[in-house]
Length: 332
Image (cartoon, rainbow, N blue to C red):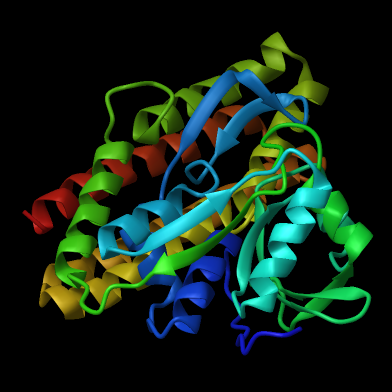
């Protein structure tokens, strides 16, 4: 069994799956447009929650939020199901494939056999599409891969029922209704307003304020936790920024591309200017990641490196606060 699904590579898994599934249904929507309408740009810091023995830092909302918000704002209905057993999950997936329905899955990364070893670690919020099955293998469109691939039934079961934080529990999803007409302007504006409100939220665990909290913590980590632990925290932060999807810098680049598309649809030239601004901020996030990696790999020749990284991140926070205030004003 095989659907007539076309694979398109993307920078981030959830955006890519959402874009590819909607393209399959005749909606020509880009990855940046999914990301922008779905309010994918985010920052979250919650030190009480631990991921890989480090404080939880995320540059994206919870798995599924981007596609759900984009779908709702465009009038698309998406069915999502989790399962109590691998057998039920397997049966439901095969029924979809029999009915020519490419299906999105949330999976764990660690046991994805086609991933390079250096990218395989315990992270359960990856997304891919299953678009068919041969006698002994499922046909996989993983949007972060250049070409399609395959997994055996056992391999797919293992990643669908990975254990740990954000355990997918066989989670599968697919569009069930596509409207004939979509209000793109309204959807874009809602997406932008949501992102601005999130990033300017008056709480210390979300948005710009959370970035400032992390910046202050970086100075304290080596004193409170020791250099070894501080460097582990930095390494986890960079991993979440640069390797999980596209993270901090990459998400800013995608958002810049979204604002370019939005500027045309909304006929708003100011969004083009702001597109360049958030792209430049993305470059600064990448510079921060490089400098942080030099510290935890013991390659930095700077003195007082943790204070320097803190100052660097604080400057990013200041620029992002100014950016999101301008963006919010630009669409009012």
